[in-house]
Amino acid sequence: MSLIEEPRSAPLRHAMFDGRTSFSPPAHSEGGEPPRGSPRIAALLTCYNRKASTLTSIARLLKQDFNSDITVFLLDDKSPDGTGEAVQARFPSVRLFSGDGNMFWCGGMRRAFEEALKEDFDFYLWLNDDTFLESDALQRLMSSYQSIASAGSNRAIVVGSTRDPGSGQHTYGGVVRSSRIHPMKYKLLEPGGQPIPCDTMNGNCVLIPRSVAAVVQNLSPEFRHGIGDFEYGVRARRMGCTVWIAPGYVGTCAWNQVSGGFLDPQLPLRSRWRHMMSRKGLPPSEHLAYMRRYGGPVWPLFWMMPYVRIILGSFWSRLRLRLI
Image 1 (cartoon, rainbow, N blue to C red):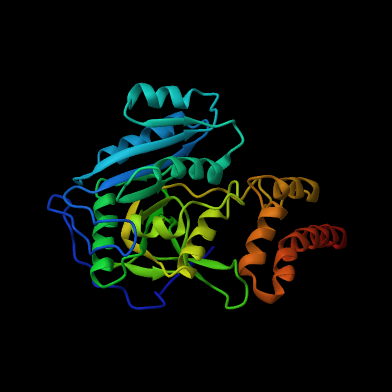
Image 2: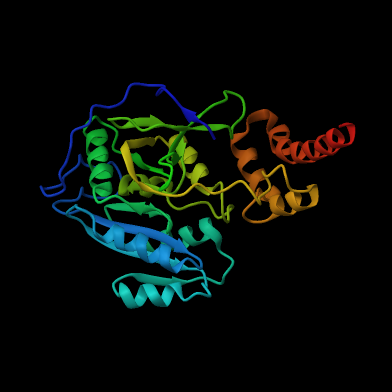
């Protein structure tokens, strides 16, 4: 993805909410009565073998400068480094669930979301275990929701933007379509001083109100690792919800490196293809599910394109080396 320099539409005027006063957004059309006082938030995380990162992420979440009732739902996907045990020892109030070691991001988040949806929370917060929130992150997200809901959009997802802890570069957040034709070409949307609408989002830090969860429900079971967060935002918008990015940055999260993966042009074709077929790559069945649903009448072409591009690109690189 590349950064977008200018928002494509005017931002919403932002009314700050300090998190210490009574919270009462406009009545939801679905999901029961609006919350009063401190909102009840279900924080959803999944982890695998990143004990130090997971502990830091949860600690930063629970130290927010915001008056709220947070319940953490964590899916530990059979971490061999003892992440689950360490979390339970340090944060005994965390609701810990165990995976089979093969759930990956989307599968783990779906399980945590499933458990949280059994209860009547006001908001659901997706949070990556390598995302470290600033102390005012929840205040920014909730204040943004308050502004958006007050303007008449109750079914609003609010996305937090992150930056790299070293370089400060924008890494994850809300995205907008960069192509009118291709359904999976997006650009990161730079946060400003007010909430800005976007098309969908990365799942690193996402606030979902009860009104949206009541309509959109859980992450799709068709996706195990990637694509699921983008698909959730696209599906939500098709169902009449909106997606916004909160002002500024809510925390840090390092960018996933391209090197060593299927997008790395330095790898031989066999290695790139193996990575592409893996759960963390671009599995054909999951890519197919997305394209059939959102790719329009020429979806087969969009589905084939990345696989053909990898093959042709590798052959072209080999040919260039022979011609030099």
